[in-house]
Image (cartoon, rainbow, N blue to C red; front, side, top):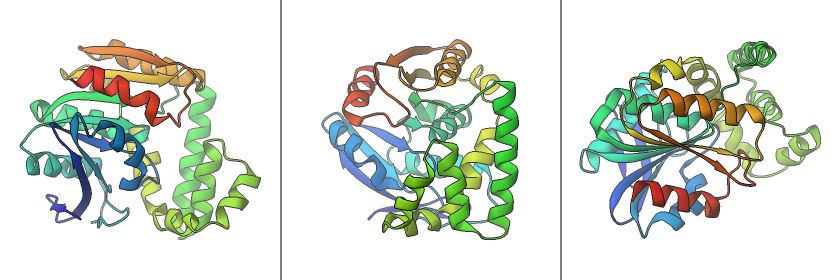
Length: 257
């Protein structure tokens, strides 16, 4: 298992497969590098695919205090290890991080693809998000990791019955182990001024959303595509936030090749 050292000394573990231009997968909340396995398998004939454990997850370490800038430095370390430039694909909160990396790293990110940045500008949704962040922060302060994971998964539509089933599975231990990183994804990254940031990013960008996802996902994707100077917008028929790798891969290949 290869690793790189980020600027603050954090060790970032990753998998590397395939051949061609480097494509780094930046995944969302409670994901480890293995979460990108299906997508990686569909891309390796076209790209050298890097799927990594973001700090605080899997085999990567973590260094406090957290900052979004440190996560961008992690991506920089991966890019520098693999030739100095790369394509980025980001999903959900990982799409927020990928976009911010493109802003800071500039020409190091040669193409950018984003799937469903989870912003909702609706007034009631903003109130609900503020309450969620407050409650999540308190649970993490009290080290109630299981409760923090439950709060998160219920916020994205998982039912009480499904949560109870998840708690009986081996995966639950892994999820609770990553609970502190929920603050990174759903507090720190969600408080960025993304639309304004997008206006200064000159990277060619593919902005995507699922046609079967909640309407706000499409609205946000549309706003992003308008703000980015060099962006194309695609709606993926029949897809939700949990986009199928077999549907997503052709869009990435077509755009990045």
